[in-house]
Length: 252
Image (cartoon, rainbow, N blue to C red; front, side):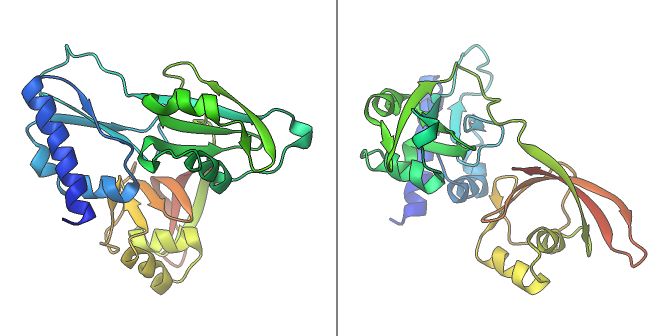
């Protein structure tokens, strides 16, 4: 059985358990490609309700919560903790990146599926982690590269730790087609931008996107692996040559 089938099988098992036992069940953190796989198979999950969340409105890696229909009486909370990592001494700290933080965590023997997104800021990072491994992280991670660090748990539901890190941008695009918009964002030729679709590096609303001739709709969330995450805000006007002024919110 290939990896995709194993993932779908595990998700179906979780959905069945929620349905049969009248409870809420949760997946581990899923990558964008795994979420896209789920979305492509979502007709197989029409016997339960489901929601996706990753610790922040901006999260790419997310958990799926399954629950029976008409079960609003079932209170549930995603098993996600947000851990802030900062240097013990700013003076003697190194500049750390996403790879550094993730590598240090993986070196503890923690499985990748238990860790969600890691948000790096100037001198600190925020790690989304499954609650079942957060205590282990707090007790065992005390150094990243040569930098001694301190860790603290954020208060529950404090999911606005990076929500303000956005900017509004306006670009000129050949059209409102998604390939033209990708080309405008990446500054790649239309041919090169289409290669990103073929390489499955383009996601719209959590689904891998291969229909590069399709226009985006206002509110669509566009992820270009290696180039960032954007919310499409629509087109405001046209240039004299018929090109479109497009507005985007860019997650920094």
